[in-house]
Amino acid sequence: MLELNHIKKVYNPGLVTEMCIFDDFSLQVKDKEFVSIIGSNGSGKTSLLNIICGSIPVDKGEITVNGQKINSLEEFKRYRRIGRVYQNPALGTCPNMTMLENLSLADNKGKAFGLGRGTNYKRKDFYREQLAALGLGLENKMDVKLGSLSGGQRQAVALVMATLTPIDFLILDEHTAALDPKTAEIIMELTDKVVREKNLTAIMVTHNLRYAVEYGSRILMMDKGHIVLDKAGEEKQALAVDDILHLFNQISIECGN
Image 1 (cartoon, rainbow, N blue to C red):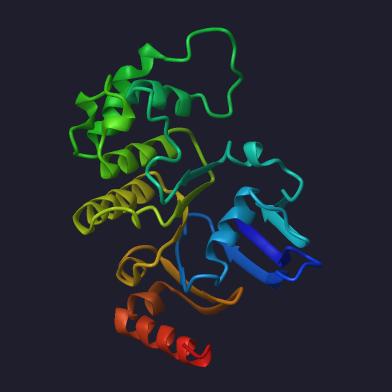
Image 2 (cartoon, rainbow, N blue to C red):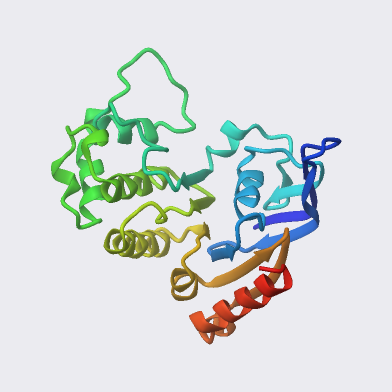
């Protein structure tokens, strides 16, 4: 279980641009939950992901995984048990390396690096199996450089890379936002399939209200660093996009927009 307890985070303290994004913020994410997080720009969604991953420190509060405090754990060490897919398909992969080389790097995450070959040809058939499960024909492009693939293909490969080794959490940082609608649908279907088949705990930030409603087991809406909606199970299933949109509009009016 992931727990954030009484988190406080202030950007640019003491300056004119000082902004408190979280003040006494708490959240629990149970094992194997697929949480969709929505909210307007500046609501704290991406900051929340960065706090979990260790990209930014907190000023107060505790972050624990299965009861163990990880506040002081460096970012690269957290990523040994966290997989992350970014909004930009260019992030999380090496464009000038082949798919086989990229997958080999991902496969070595958390392991000691020596002076041997970085590419593990003995695992090539395993990588092909992982790619074939996507149904996109990527298993036939193992020697193609990732930079020559489409954005959707690269996101699909990034999803495989992020979940290639055993992880505690899959972090999805608006991973369909840069894709065209048709490709975004494919990536979301693949995401749901991977999360279910590998029994992952996933946290997805998205601006697509329909994806937030249709996918996952829990939905959160954030506003100004606070959770203003938290629905799971049957309550989430009963939600419609119009319900979410209505709440969005209410918040927007209250903010003077």
